[in-house]
Amino acid sequence: MARIWYGWAAALLAVCFFSAAAPAQGPEPMELPTAPVIDGQAYPDCRYEYRERNLARSRVEDIAACIERIDRYYTDVVTPFALGLEADGQTAEEDDAAYRAVEARYRDDREYLSERYCRYAECEDYEPTALSGERDLADGMQQCGEPGDTIYLEGLIGLLVNRARQIDTGTNFTGALIGFACRLEPEERQAAAAASDEVIAREEVGATAAWVSPSREEVSGSSTVTAMNSEPSGATCLDITDVIIIGGEEERATRRMCRAPGESRYVLQG
Image (cartoon, rainbow, N blue to C red; front, side, top):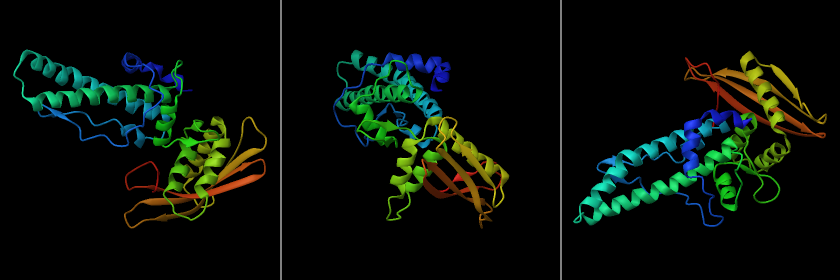
């Protein structure tokens, strides 16, 4: 599926420039220092912006956009600055320090973003490493089974798991959802998402859409609108109960989707 994104030729060529394999060891920095500034121009602080997106293809788009931004900064700002340092034998020490900070930040971001791009775009020569597994978990992927076996949950299932993380229920609610999600095939997650879209479009209490696995008889589920109301802000909200059944085992979760005044799309509420 993801290989249809290879139309991003320019971005992929840029990625390949820094496609050296990531080292297998070394901790992933949780936070980076404040973006350094050269000649009054701040380095683009876009490294993690892709995490705000739920779909893998959307993350590819954001990563490619960030690569383009930092490459442009390096070409337009860092390179001329470095040439100036080279020409000026008496350059102030703080100027040299600023350059070194930007240079290090750029190299680190370029390697990181290139690896993440291939992770989500499923580049043919991409091979996961211990470090990429750590990055997967930091990106919000779920671990299934053995360490290093991670799965990116997108669409409906991903939204449900992310929502469950925000609820302190004192139960293993999130764990149960993740366990079920790990057992679903990609086409089954897509079927669940399609059922959800159907009941949302109907916008009525009692609207139900069932789905069945296209490949496994024992896997099915449904989405049902259990409540609909208007908020003081003018937003319209739906409470939706989703059911997943695998081999006779059932898991269900309720979420709230709201549509702001003047908007056409319902958004999952945190």
